Image (cartoon, rainbow, N blue to C red; front, side, top):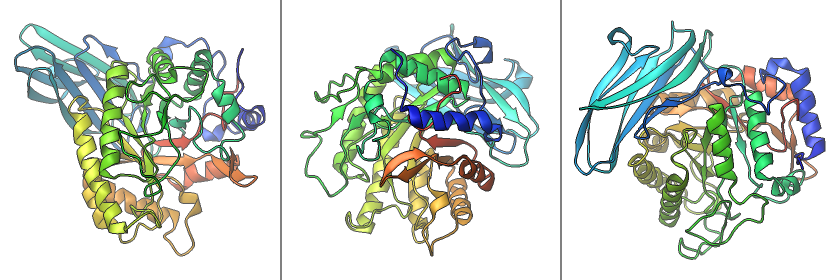
Amino acid sequence: MRVALSDCVFAGALLWLVCHASLDVRSATGFDRPQRETLPDEAVQSFAGISLTLIPPSPVTDRIELDIRGSVRNDVDGSRTFEVALYLDEEKPQQRLHQAALTIDPQSAAGLAFRWPAQGHAGRHRVIIAARSGDVTLRMERRIEIIASDVRSTGRLGGAWVDLYHHDEQEGRPFNAELAKMTDGNWRELVRAMHTTEQNLLVVTMMFQNFTHRAKHDFTPETYPGRAYYPSELYSARMPIASSDPLETILDEADKLGMHVMPGVGMYAFFDYTPGSLRWCMNVADELWRRYGGHPSFYGWYLSHEQGGGLYMPGLGDPAIQRREMVDFFRAFTAHVKRYAPDKPVLLATNPYALRGAEETYRELLPHVDILGPFGFHRMPEGDLTGEQAAALLQSLCDEAGCHLWLDLETFVFRNGVELHPRPIGELIGDLRRFPNFEKTLHYQFPGLMSAPAM
């Protein structure tokens, strides 16, 4: 039986999508019969030992630098040197964008990265990576659409967060009961719906449920009480939802459609970047990679714990200690996951409040964060920066550090206390026009707040 995610909420979202084409969330019929010729970013892979990641993924405008990252894995018992090259459209010398020699230790991976200005290259392209060592050749390609524009933003929703079940029962009251009933077939339907509306990047909010905060608990990684959304071997407790492994289902469907998925490493505790949280996150990331890293749609890592824009949360401990914990956490965590997935980005979501005074901490933090995805620019506190000023400051800090800045657009409003309901369409369009500097726009969230027209 098909589960409709909160009929009243989906009906409102459906009306938005049908009546407001200026959102650029494209409608189409037949989303349960994907057409392979229209894949946005299909991965063509000749060997499991090579990977290619484009940041941001397609589509992009010609006002950005495309971050092209590749990695090669050496699964033999001796070290090996690969000659690696990146090409545009054709594997010919005149089309070569970058090349490097990678000497890789046994049973290890190594990566390369190249920033390519997209200006002057509007149209549809293929980015190709080829790695050669002796008689071994590994090859992979990804498609990219570059849109001619006078701003960095594409002006469209490129993906969304996906709750497997919302962590707060009061906030999730309009849709949690339906989420809990989602079968594997329902999750596939949701992935196809996102693909139909060209929201081709899914950020799974968290892979464990444990609703608490830094300094509000006394557990350790060994006594962690949370419940997993997948068959974890680290912790035995499970969330009581219909699907036993929704991430596997989501990734499998995303593989077929050329989409991208970022599993959420969390929840240990909100705003918790202590050494205990770091150890827990490393262990969970290792398990997620062992279980799911072979999927072509596995795009990178989302750290579920969030943070305030000042890089600390009032009332949860000394601000200086919280800031130091964040820097130490991401320095260690990002280096850890890059050992086996050098090309896969790490995403952090923060709000943009109280940025002033935190600039130096950002300068220490952002070199260890691949993508910063701030949210809430439309509700800046009185006396703080404007949303535009906050976005400009974060863009300058990200540019300085080589970090990508994406917009986490809030597509919800609080009603009936703290319940999450669809945000008025005019406000969404207003934000897309108001903040044209973000190279990619995702939103929170798709389930319960939005649907494809045919659902």
